[in-house]
Image (cartoon, rainbow, N blue to C red; front, side):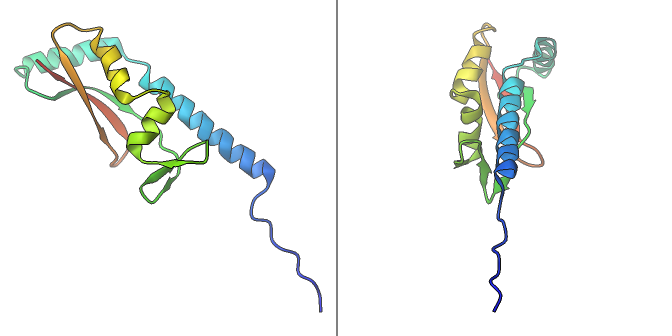
Length: 130
């Protein structure tokens, strides 16, 4: 009876390529989140003013590139699957609140908060209130 050779599940080359893709996505998301288009941000603040300074007005959106999702969790380069709320701080290397506070430190008399949405794409939105 012939001995069957087991089929290969994954090669080191495939693993390295996959991991490099995760790392590149995470680094790209970090760069997106840390790059504020100040002209657009200020323009959106003027739109907020024109709308009567309504509470929680979205003044900026950071669209992100998402990695492979397994159920409700996102695959990360360190092998840990994370929720969206944990994935973004993983990419940044610090809490989302710190990012928002850094932006808020550049405005005066404006309170900034944030929200996350996943459908159809992942977006971190910055909201303004008086």
